[in-house]
Image 1 (tube, rainbow, N blue to C red):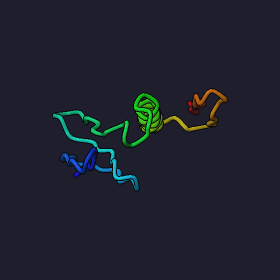
Image 2: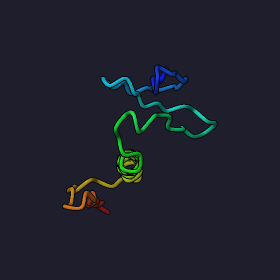
Image 3: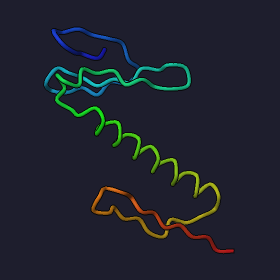
Length: 92
């Protein structure tokens, strides 16, 4: 259960517990997941949180895809603006 305002609870398949009593949850909606949370109570910026999740998902997906296609990860770096730069190569 995801805990929220005044002890309200809602169901979610995955829950990130927080010490302040305002949890974050991911609820399955068909082929997708819905984020459920009281962001005001959790004191988390929803847009920044979602951007962070999406960036990590894209990074993980990229690494998986390039390795499946026979590429090697040559270099990775995080730029000042938070962008992740990945250099891949393949011997032919």
